[in-house]
Amino acid sequence: MKRLAGRSALVTGGNTGIGRAIALAYADEGADVAVAWIEREPEARSLVAEIEARGRKGRAFRCDVTSEADVAACLRDTVAAFGKLDILVSNAGIQHAQAITEMSVEDWDRMIAVHLRGAFLMAREAARHMIPKRRGWMIFTCSQLGYIGREHYSAYSAAKAGLIVFMRSLAKELAPHGILVNGVSPGLVDTGFDPLSDSMKQVHAASLPLKRLGTPEDMTSAYVFLASDEARYYCGQLLHPNGGEIMP
Image (cartoon, rainbow, N blue to C red; front, side, top):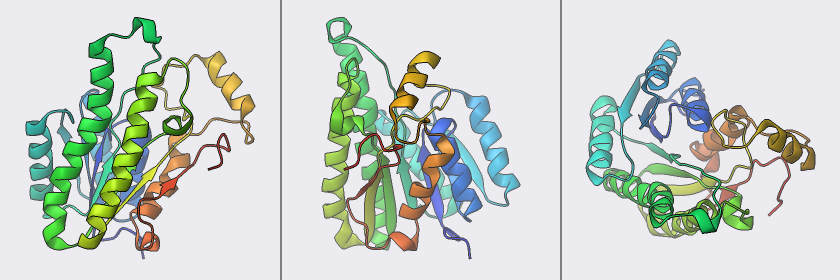
């Protein structure tokens, strides 16, 4: 029996990197999957084809997660396509290395908006659908930088720290409605879209106990588990696939 059989999912930032790997893993486990994307439309379209080749329904919706209207439309279209929404993976994010002395107010606001406003809007719309059904799963992509921070990543680290507390607060609020809220806090993952040079990646990999960077596929087991019945007693928890960089 596939662990997500009969369920439908929406993955934001789903057409590349970790999001794409999650979408395919969910389809492999029997779920119908919609992805929300803002850039790289060809990757979104090819992903839908891959999902459907696995025998599941796939959809791709262009959605700026900081836009209230876009988010409402994305949730509405997902429910219309699948008849319901069981799983929300709030994964959309941006990342920029930037010295504090070079950071504009607009840079700061955009980082906070994508990670926190986007998570809030998606969670609110998903909760409005899930609460009447008294069933649902929400999974937030956090980051170990929300714990430890990193130079030149102050805005990103602050946004992810806020997301961790938002996730835990939401878990307490929604648990009585039958909705399980948890998070995944990846270490550095080599997605091909990150801003680090190859030499910086090599240095970071050498510092890890496992001596390699993570791949998007290394992350998917955590997301599948948290969306399955196996995680029925997980509430407000963070899983940490990070190669041993931090051991909370």
